[in-house]
Image (tube, one colour):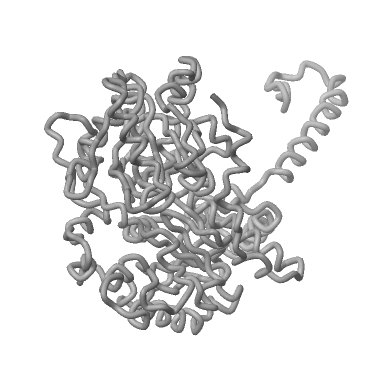
Length: 512
């Protein structure tokens, strides 16, 4: 007679006396296997291809029940532990404005140049970057430098917003509403020789259209923002005198509920400054890194440089004195004459030649507090020297460090009559160690002050556009939080800050 085979070992049992011990061994093992089978998560069978998994079962009724059970389990898990939404709090709704407020203006670009000598139409090429720069001497990086007009911010920003990762067609999801109104381009048609009724017409038409949209009622427009390619003061004409400059856009009651970003802000709280468009528009982080490395290794022959023209029509302008000091400094100062009629400063290659060969770049106020030259100097790794807080410190708070001494030199001049500065002497007093640190901080700022190509992926390096959007979203969220607390979201929203451009908050930080 054959010996029975052990279920566990597969061997012949030699003796019946072992039967009881084997049974007690098998039973616990069987219970353990059943427990494992009961605990197994069969929902994994349905994750990749439910229909194929279902076809392996012969009992269709049981398959249907199992599938519904799996859906319930997965839905429960999603509700308990939802996947993070990378756009949460960052969604922006892009208003589809009537074309007369943007694209029609570009179609009639020849009208924009009234009162100026330049034809602005070529600057509209390449997303508003302008024509590609011809650079046979390889001063710049090929295919990433353009002849960009400093007033093209509206067009550039709009084109980049169209590529913004967190755009939504559902305005109820949006944390902010963007208004693609080309305010500066529109007003440029009427700055010279037109009465205030004509100058203000588009502003009235825009606000009449906006307040009728359902998005306006949610926060009375305080979640709306737009971008202007001119200084904020051009839109804040405070009287109805025909001789006064600009439009009254920002003083219209409805417009005061919106925020405006422009190349230079005003004294009002709902105006914000973002960088002027420079001529460098990289398509990748590698291009930025390559340019930064060039500026780090660049040998600098001149102690300081100034690119600009005197402003004798402005009695408080310090430019004349700066030019005189530069001329007196022999080979230690590089002067690029940008006087009226000169074309030197219109060529980005010329400007970069000056700034990349200089340790410091002087940035006095001009027609207004700010100037694009300060951003050109940052691109060149040239340490900016400021004479008034309104040129940078009170302006670009989303893009420049709060500690202005980390990247610039400050020589405050309240009144040209009180000029007691010898620029060369003051700059020579700065230690080489500090110069190296300042330059490195300036070079690190380059990604944050350029408007990259719309196809550019930030890859952890935010450009000027992304920082501006981030800053605006934070400001709108602050208003929204106030409203959640049952308070008036408009309190202080459009107040004026008369101390914004005073010297005193910054003089305590002056270092020699």
